Length: 159
Image 1: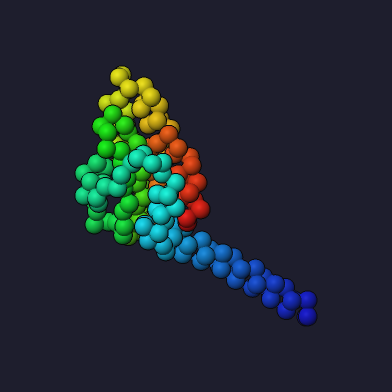
Image 2: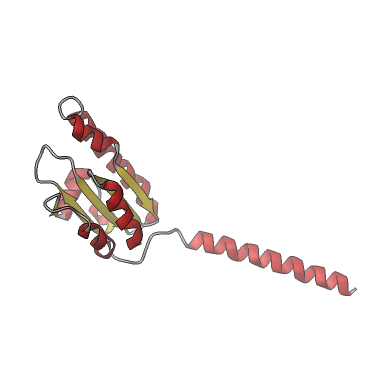
């Protein structure tokens, strides 16, 4: 009889543990509670002198064709020289379910730039091919730059 009670408690504990794990996975989708500016600060400090300059949210909306109403913060930097494709975008979304839509918009921007620079600026085209686009829950990071890996590492540390 004792053995039977022990088995019931054991099964109950395993079921509760399983339910807890499912709950944690379902409620934690990654991302951060930090603002886009807080996440971007170490990335911005890693920018090389005169590499890119800060742009407005409207500039980001226009460049990427994104719905600014779906964002909780945007940090957008781009090079002022039209012959330099360097740019960095960090977006905090209101809803992480919109991440796919934003990633598609960024990928479309990269593809458009690749088509534009492919035949006459091979070094810029190579930068575009090595673009970094990452989604971490409610935060999206995009960068095209000579040091995009370094900037991505700064972003990961900021999360």
